[in-house]
Image (cartoon, rainbow, N blue to C red; front, side):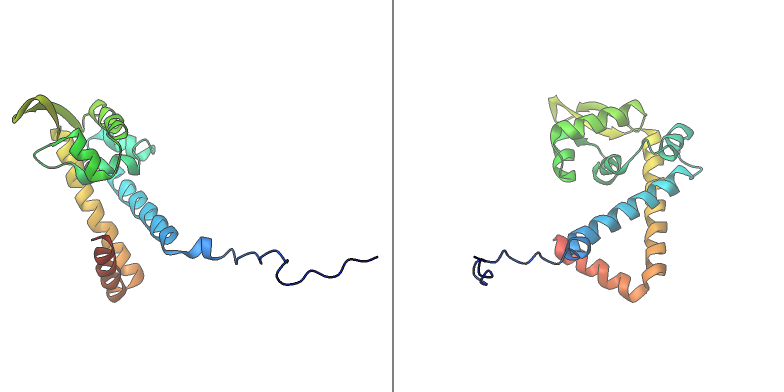
Length: 167
């Protein structure tokens, strides 16, 4: 005896269209950020003002987007590790590892905190300040390239939308 065909209430749900996983806003933002950071690092690796050792590290992909967190978030006057980690949205332990690497590369150093004798502040070294200047120029160049690629009007709308969304 043959079984009757399944009714709609017993049928398994239809598989969702898989395309949404490739085109949702979060994935597009992530891809755009990776592309932007890769371009910034590429430009920095070729900047004559960047100390040669740092330039070589960037050119060999030893410096990555995670290291850019320090460049983006470290205050010019220095920051405590906990504040730096919070600003970058990272754990204190993960930020500590990045600071250790950047300290070994000569980008940052740890100094006593003038307001708390028990605390230490992470500060840019002279090489780190050159790195920061190269970062600023590379970001400006990458933003200029973005504007050229999508047009000034779209770039403005994207910037305003991201600013509003991130606030």
